[in-house]
Structure formats: structure tokens, C-alpha cells
Image (spheres, rainbow, N blue to C red):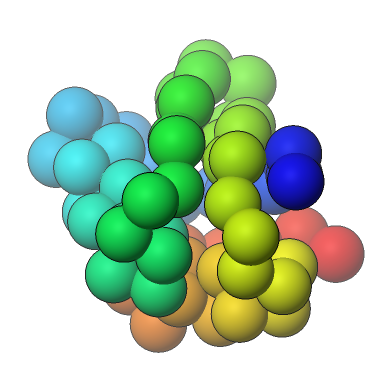
Length: 65
């Protein structure tokens, strides 16, 4: 299932890796594409949206509803 998140607070490549790792910790098979300039995180995952949003938030980034 394709999901798009608006994630603020990503300022560098390390941030992108942290968000990707958080998502893939929740779903190791997830495909993650990040457009930091647009604050967009596109995810292909079987996990519920809430699970992925929580994983991103726990890494310290704000996820818009």
C-alpha cells in the first residue's frame, strides 16, 4: 500500500537515513523514498499508517496528520 507522509525536521542525509531506518524497523520490506525539500516521505508498506507515523515520530521528527 502506498502512503505519503509530510515529515518536518529533516535537514540532512543523516535525517533521511534515520527516517528510513525507523520505517524499515517497523516493516523490513518497506520501500522508502524521501524528498527532503518537500518534506515528503513516500512509503510502500503493508503496515498501518499509524504504525509508520509512530515510528517516524519516535525518531524525533514531526509527522503532519
